[in-house]
Amino acid sequence: MSILTHAHDHHHVSPTEAVMNAVRTAFHAVVDWHRKRRAEAELMEMDDRMLADLGITRGEIHEKVWG
Image 1 (cartoon, helix red, strand yellow):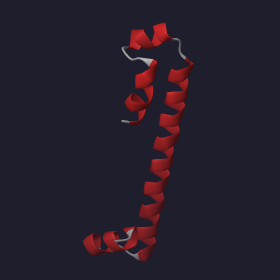
Image 2 (cartoon, helix red, strand yellow):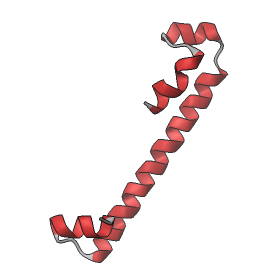
Image 3 (cartoon, helix red, strand yellow):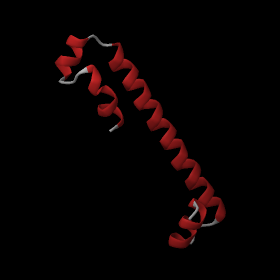
């Protein structure tokens, strides 16, 4: 089922509202992806001692950031 169909079925939103909701959802996904990418890069720049102070190892960074 498409986003437009799904939104229309449940809330009787207009096509314009459905598109705006889809754009908003996509925007938030991109912002979240960018934040995670930046966090991962910052953690990778830390030395192992700094990571240990945070309670993580270098091998855990990706999983901790991306879940």
